[in-house]
Length: 117
Image (cartoon, rainbow, N blue to C red; front, top):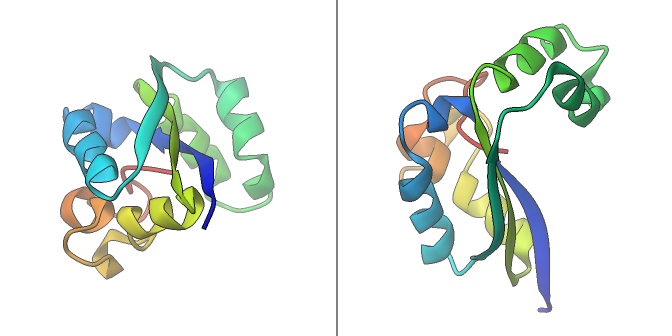
């Protein structure tokens, strides 16, 4: 497998609960390296553009509001097959279905507040 990079976002429900360090440790323990990282507060326009693929879905406005509600941590993860490794360590989108030992399984509270992207 080739080394690749992927985008990761630690969402407001995680930053509000001071989980950034624990989540980063899980990425690193999974063999991913954080090569860039920035904490920022998304504007409504930025969140809307990022999630525009969901614009027609009923949860779109709520999702955009949530992503603007507190700072997020955007980062670039690097490693062997980084996309797959990132998805594996994040766990299922719905925390209720995510395995223990995954970010969402350990820290997620509900599908709409699922810690990371």
